[in-house]
Image (cartoon, rainbow, N blue to C red):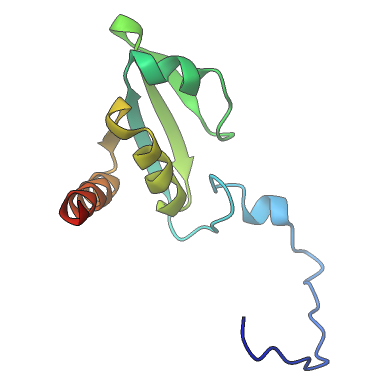
Length: 115
């Protein structure tokens, strides 16, 4: 931050505001900008790691043959899940939504172009 100034203005939080409710559909701190049903398949390497943690209240995990899993989430935005999926590299494959598939593909292509 540059040239910060004290304006002496005070912020008043609305009485009915709940940070828990506001971020309830978030994977972290991004607020809701839609409604997305997310499905991600994880290979046997990642399945154990993903399956042993509760990532979001909406999550459902389906065991698949060969030790793989499918993770289902209902989220309010795709920003954080996109970065999280990219962190798993080739161990994760987006099944839906199509918009998330496109975003992951664009990110992967940009990574390849930068190398």
